[in-house]
Amino acid sequence: MKILVSAKRVSDPNAKLSISGDRRWIEGDVEYVMNYFCENAIECALQLAEEHGDIETIALGIGESDETARFIRQGALARGIDRGILVVADEQTTDSDLIARIYAAVVEREQPDLVLIGKQAVDGDSNQVGQLLAEYLGWPQATFASKLERDGDQLVVTREVDGGLETLALSLPCVVTADLRLNEPRFAPLAGIMKAKKKPLEELELSDLELDDAQPKVRIVHMSAPAGRKAGMIVKDVEDLIAKLRGEARVL
Image (cartoon, rainbow, N blue to C red; front, side, top):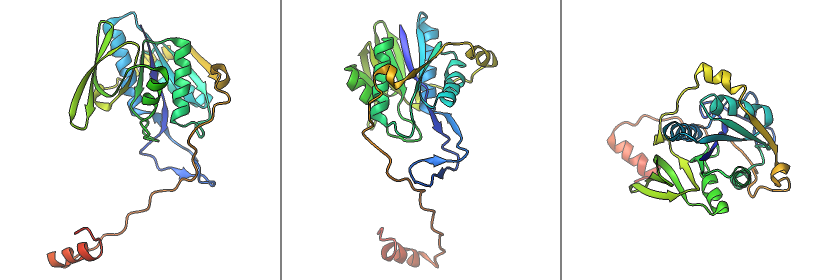
């Protein structure tokens, strides 16, 4: 069995970001972290490999060459993933659809039995790549997975939905997107960090996947910082509060 798993770096959601002069990207000393949901997908792949054996795990990262390679090694290979694939692409111009097409092209090359992806990236929060990929491949899918078990030639996936929990049985190959409650990601041990330096990491260009002419369907036109909070006010009594809620805030 072969598992392809996502390893995406994202800007740290706890960091204060600066918008570039053309208002289309962020600039300065940007701090990056491994996407939290990708960490759950990586942990799931490792647990399946440990439980069932005879499973090859591959981490796929898309972005700038050096930095993305570093995150693949430190965030995936150091934790125990067998090897990595880096697809070099401009992160400013790749949308969810283009990312899904890159994954589909890598799937064609690698022929995995399972693709595990974080349910969304915490920078864009689009929650689209897994669903688009399943459509392009024509594979069954289970999104928002909070539990996953292998049962012979199929996977039993519990997914979180608005009304509670839904359990699906999927035939392989399939696409699963990981939620935060799927597991508790492990830390990379020192030995794993040292071994990661020697693990294979293949670097591909979009032309290698026959996607060098591919164009994104979404482009960033303008970025702006959220408006600052307005100062609060002190009201004299309950009647004054109700009057302001009715007359100024118009919420009553």
